[in-house]
Length: 546
Ligand code: PEP
Ligand code: MG
Image (cartoon, rainbow, N blue to C red; front, top):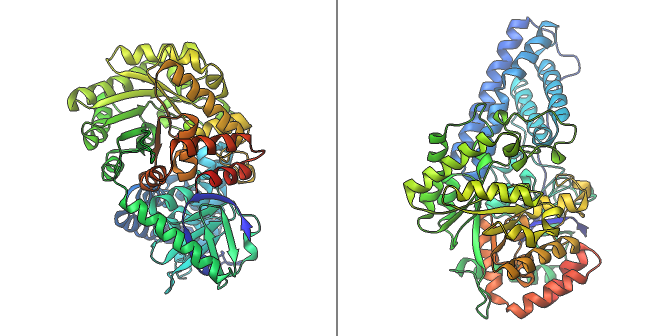
């Protein structure tokens, strides 16, 4: 049995398939006429982009965006320039493409954060273009005849986005973390998934395996009776999830709002089909990642209004731009930083350029006025009481309710004082883990530390929930932790009043909560808090929530 980080709950059993081998540029490719090489590259890159765009159109939500972003990379002007340079120096088309991608990848890696993460996408684009140039079949994931389990070192978004959940019944990867592309897309497709599995390369294609996306395990040649029991348990869980109609409450009637995380109007319309009570996190920056200039107040108002309209009279918590670190925004004037996760990101950009924050708040207020929606606004990456007060005053000046994200230990420690200025808070467990454990949230080798079951993270959440209770104000969780059904029960036991997660996680979370009492949630929380590590916290909690 192999263990990793559980990211999408559920059981998948079947023979292993692995992505098709990637083409390599021939060792001694004949140098051609540079202009012919440049044209050959251009034609192949355009064909690759065309195919990715066609798949993007057929997909939806995050999958669709990831595919179109990868298509854009294939047509990157910088890439074409590098290819021309190598062609002029005498390289043939496949060699020039490989060398050019290497150069671009080095630049992306040096930039760090989200750019560095896109290196996987770059290599994917390289392989597709080289295969096209060499007239080889398109590399990627085979389409198996029988339901199969996909194992890989890591998956390119272009592969994961096109997956058919009827044929690929589970995914396990050796790399990646709970917030990696693989995890995000598997969650959107509802495919059970485990990432950061050590030694997974020992398992070969054709082996029969069982992936348990709740416990984070991959079992080779599993015991058939055990598998049957797990599959039956999974079937019952899925049935309960499908039948759950909301609103969020425990079996004994303790209310917990279940909300969705969205990034645009299209995502909000998909989320609105789920039994949610609103949006707990609208990540506004994700609408602007491809913008080189700041959108006008009117443009912003249109984008925000699309989300508000989708939610009707349900509440929407808008987060102001969380630019910086892994989400660089071209127009946000971010300084060149050696360590962007600890640099000018989130509200710090607003503090440096208050006029830009004001324009965003004006856009949000205009969209609210247009739609009459129930809108609240929160700031990311707050660290001091003064920042919370400064932000809240600006939001209130526009007649809106104000909150902050709790993502730093400093705001946990002063939670009581934060509440003096705020109407609500929402805990961003992804970043709170990263800053509490001094561990990069994207690093697969540190994923044990950034696992949301870590007792120190749970203890931080309890401090904030207690402060919320004293202040009589709501405390939400909108990080990935809220998407795990068992963890959602523990968060409820810790005193959290709302859970905001990906739309596909809404029903599994709501259905699990409906099966347990508040007393069970509290006992599970107490047991998890007392555990010596994340794995034993999860085990101890599960015993109380069976
Ligand atoms: C978080 O940090 O938990 C969060 C929800 O914000 P993001 O994942 O967008 O950084
Ligand atoms: Mg965050």
